[in-house]
Length: 552
Figure 1 (cartoon, one colour):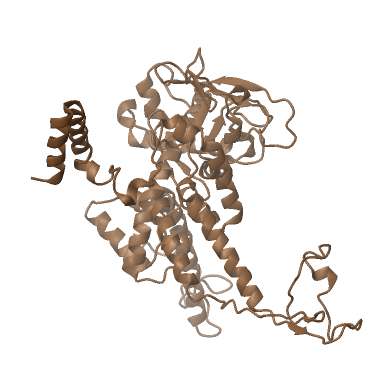
Figure 2 (cartoon, rainbow, N blue to C red):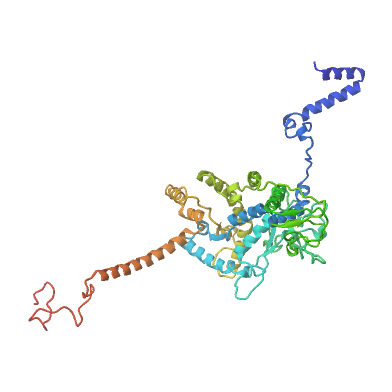
């Protein structure tokens, strides 16, 4: 019998009420200290006692903090090389020069042949390029559609979300009136910066009682601009009330149910990146100071004579106006007053542990962002297998974000454009406006971006050939994966090149034969000057007999 049990019995004998309370408390402790209560949810372990774990809903955890996260993420992007590199790595591999449209019409639903579907897809591509490759698609008339993809994705990475409005604005020499208007995340905010207590409007996003997003509140000026005077908000419905047309594209990813605003890509590693930036700056300054060689002259008596050598020129001083500032310079001789001494310090730079420490921190940052260390710092010094594994793991993530961007940004805009093209009868699509299934069949498309890097071309091509031969893949998909191109376009181009190459070879062969003939000889296949070959004696002027006959 334990001491605690004896004490409980003694207390229960003297004071039954107190004994009952002790028994109830002990029972509660047994419940709390079972299962996760002994581990991650423990409240009595010393290692977990100081953990401030209080949390809230998506509003308290995300929406109330997203403004600070957004501004800090942008600051890291502009000042910390690793953060800047991580964001640009995402931008380059997910979007690159832009996701290209490849119409993929469902011909089974439409009841058309493969040749008819291919012809229609070619026509759609030509019309799409007329709009997408022109800056007319941008409401600001600056970027084409592929550059808008880069800008939207980059803003999502830094700010957590981005808006795209789809206004109609006619322009000369442009048959399509659809425009894309990107809106920075800061302008999406609740009127007067006050979220409603009933959660109807949070972060500028207005929802119905059942949670459906019904409208967005957008300010007419950027709230962080110094030129802001009187900000006004405009309520934009998410979908048109009469047509059901999508008015706003909210580009964001959610990590909590009910979440209305996105979290910046760098949010989980903000502290690590900031501390790494400070450490890198400190090491850089220490290395610069260590590289300076300065000499100090100490005098026994006061003297007005100048120092031996030269002081730091005023134009090279950082704090020339601050008399209390002491500066070092490379190869400088400094004059000291009587009684002053200099104690040198050896910073021991470069730090031999700097590279290992930075590598360890970058590995943790890369693990959080799903960017392998090799790709984060652009250093592939491991084996082929290790580097290949890192690239494959990274491309799982790149493909996921590419599919998300295509579904939330590219495809909705394409469907709006195709609707206008069909309405203006530039593209014939029977049943487009009468049956949603037929409309979807016409709108089916693939979005292809930059190809995955190839470490060993011979191995990669051999593996691709085997996949195609065994039916595991197709030539079209392998072309997209390896080069980002289109197989049918390549086949058409190769056909033209082979035709041109055969013509060149034919001409070259004829020239070679002409060079091999003896000097003075007539070229093969030509007749002597002045007529055909000479006739035998006695035959001049007689008509030739038919071949194989006797002339009768």
